[in-house]
Length: 309
Length: 179
Image (tube, rainbow over all chains, first blue to last red):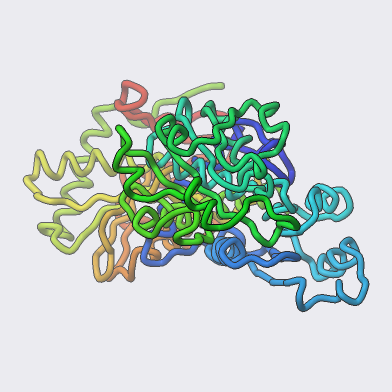
């Protein structure tokens, strides 16, 4: 033990519960490190990491880059808008060119489902999936579970509702896998048009009434409506979405217990969540961001461990 | 595997008292001094010294921190078994403090080298001293020597020095084991 059972982090579904526990334990140590006056350790000083973001990202990229730098790795960044992809180069060629510069770990975000798995079969580097299309976003799910564990002591036995655009969300899918693996009960809530038809086959229940969902849960993980992934209208108007699925302070105050509010960001204030909810004591949104760095440090450290000298 | 006893609990008690007295000679009331036990094994010795200094010698408000050096080691990715971290508990700054690093056995000196780097994450100390219970002579890989030592031991590389504490093994003792 004390080693990951996988060679890459491609998705939560490839992990075992013991992997998640190991990542969390390691993240505990890194969380302490990033709260020191000097927030850096020299472990990865001879490791080079390439951040390949074929799809836009701000916070995930920043979080990964900070995690890598806190571990003393050398970092190179790449974004699709400045690349030769537009000149017709294939993904494998692009990545192999980068690997020729002696890169050990690749962090990749890509619009296509399975891009990470594909790459892991064709290139000689550790791959970390930072989001592949609507498929998985494993580090986000890990940091979400880690934040729940930090706030409530454990994930096991907790009731978590994921609210919003489940259909287009890689965060939702990775979260479902991660939460279930740790023994949580998961419900999804949103407009029926934004809930995948066969979602119940994953063992989650569906609730279309937001009030009932909030009454049931210990934690509400609120997702953004991903307008950029929508080719058709899934609901009549943003205003109607907010009326039916937007969370406001009054709703929370009327609940019998204090539930925890999470959001992976970016928040559309006033759409899926009001400002007073996002900034309330019940919200752990900013803790999620801090924990994201610790979790990513843990994942990178544990994968780098496998690259023997 | 044969096992020879180097120090029994009475020997250790005498040594701990001597080390406590030597520390008091150099650090008076410890107002500018902090003790840092290296995790995991040095923390038992550090805790024991703190108890002794407080209970038997009346030193008040000693600052004790525990430092994990896993992420500073120079053998990451070079071992067959992965390194396992333990917690760091230092709830004070060491800026301008006299630091005493405490560990049970000084062997190659590499752990202490890592600790010297790690400690800098908590500020710039005024100076750093090293206290060890067992100093294994002739086995150093680096130019590091202790300021306070319990007992100097000559052991060959095939031998292992094991320290057990009442807290974990019901008995205070130091053994020499044939690997």
